[in-house]
Image 1 (spheres, helix red, strand yellow):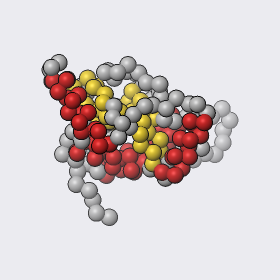
Image 2 (cartoon, helix red, strand yellow):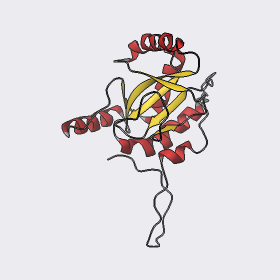
Image 3 (cartoon, one colour):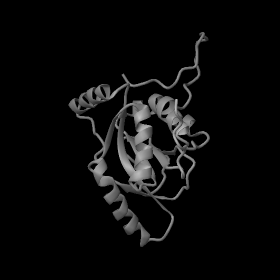
Image 4 (cartoon, one colour):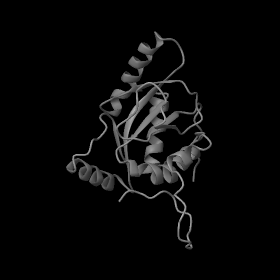
Length: 190
């Protein structure tokens, strides 16, 4: 396997733990800083598609410059992870039929490794400081993100913050009945 060149500057990756969202512009208890990056005020950027991201980031950066330095331009990205794009699209259709609220804006439906690649692309090519991941299905946060996306980000040279993975995938409550068990990653969505 050919190793990818490391990223020159670590993109900031923030994961929203509630699909409904927290207050824009600040790191609230429902947000997890996944990477080791400068913790600055968040300026979320919403775009309809990937081609609109560079223009939206430039506009947000120009507007934020008036407030002074110290902001992170983060692209809002609604995420649904699955074994493949087809499975993610099928799960999205199920959620839409159930009239479940879906975060607006740019969406990523696909594999955990593909998400890592998109994060790097948005950081390198689109002028974003990073991403604000908004899970479409909260069940998809723990397992696929921590066992697929995080290792791929690390392989690409992104520094993951100590303890961040534990915050995304908290340990299961203690068993009340002793039983032989084996450690498992967080469950993946059905």
